[in-house]
Length: 410
Image (spheres, one colour):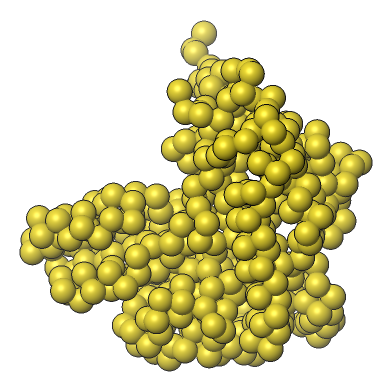
C-alpha cells in the first residue's frame, strides 16, 4: 500500500500544538467597538485595528446600505470588465486628495495592493531592500516580484546605507519597502532618513501606511504627512480596513505610477472589484477623517492617558509592584506591546486578561519573532476601559512574579 500523501499534515499540526503556536478563531457577536461580546460575555476590546471606532459607526453603515440598494451586493467582475462603478473612482479621488498625491488606485485588499505594486515595479533584474520586521504582504510581494531581496536591520538607516553600498550598483532598479507604523511593535519607521537614502542611491521608496492612515498627521493622512514628506516622490500603500473601518487597499502616488499599475498589476487586473458597500463605507470614513478631527484627537488623548497609567497606576494601586516596569515596547502610536519570554507565557497572560474581562489575545511566532500581548487603542475607549486594563495588568504581574509566567525574557 502506498503511503498516505497527506499524513504529514497531522504531524505538522502536532508540532504546532507542542510549540504553543496553535490558533483558532474566536467569534465576536454584534457590532465591533470598544467593547465586544464573546462567548456570551462582554469584554473591553484591546485587540482591534479599528482605531477610530468607525467600523460600527451608523454613518458608514448607512452609506454601505445605500450603495447596496443602488448597485447591488457585488461588483460582478474585474474593474476592467464589469466591476467598475463611479463610487470606485470617487473613492480613489478622495484618497488622492487626503494623501495630496496626483492619483490613487483601489484594490480589493491591502494585501493585494502590496503584492500588486511590488511585483509590478520590480523583477529579476532588480533589487529590493526590505525592513526585517515588514508585514507579510510586503515580504511576499518582494518574493513574488522575482527581484533579489535583501533585508536591513529594523528601522536602521545606517544598515540600509551599508547594504545599498554593497549591492545597488549591480542592479537595474532598486525599491526600498517599509511599513510606516509596524503593526506588531507600534514603532515608526525613520521616514525622512529613508527618503534621503533613497534619493542618494536612486531608489524608489514604498511606504505601507496601513496602521497610519486616519491616525497620524495633521489631517489624518498618515506618517508621510506626520514626517513632513507630503508631496515627495514616493509610493504610498495602505488599507481601508483599519482606521477607515471598511475593506480594501490602495496605492497613492504620481499619475504615471497609478496608470502603470492599472495596466500591469495582476492583483488589480485579475481580481473582482471592491464591493459597492465597502467602497461607500470607506468613502464615508475618509469624509469623517477630514471633517471630524476630534475623533483622531480623542484617540491620541487615550494614548497619552494609557502612557500615564502604565507609568503611575501600578505603583499607586499595588504596593507589591512598586518600581515594577512592564516591558512595553512602544509609546509612539496606539499600539502597545507587552513582550513576553515565550509562547506559553503569552497564552497565560492572554487567558488571565480574558478572565478579567480584557480581550487582548497572545501574539506568537511565526506572526512575530518574540511572543507578546498586543494592545491597540481606539478613540471610543473611555477612562474606565483604560483603568480596567492597567488594573488587570498589575494583578497579573503580581501573580506572574511568583510563577513560571513572569514577563521577563528567559
